[in-house]
Amino acid sequence: MKRRDCNDCSCGMPPSDGSDEGPSAEDIAAFSDPTRPCPSCGVDLHDDVAICWKCGHAVDGSDEAKGPPTWIVITGVALAVIFGVMLMI
Image (cartoon, rainbow, N blue to C red; front, side, top):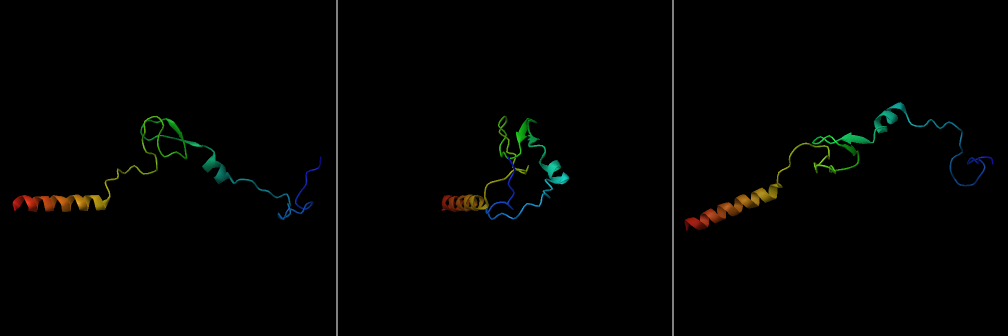
């Protein structure tokens, strides 16, 4: 059976000239290993996961510990000040 190119049909795709280059060497190098090690326990993880299935470590790409949002800190300080003023009265 002969393979039909878009030259032979009316699908609307551009004609195939047979020059499909395929992926570049850089693409192959970048996407050839679908896993990465967990920074905490070292188990192999798929590169699209956010949390390690073994140890629970967040692997979102940042190793910085995030604190509470600023509005929570400001609210806590304000409540502490109000409570301190109320005790002085």
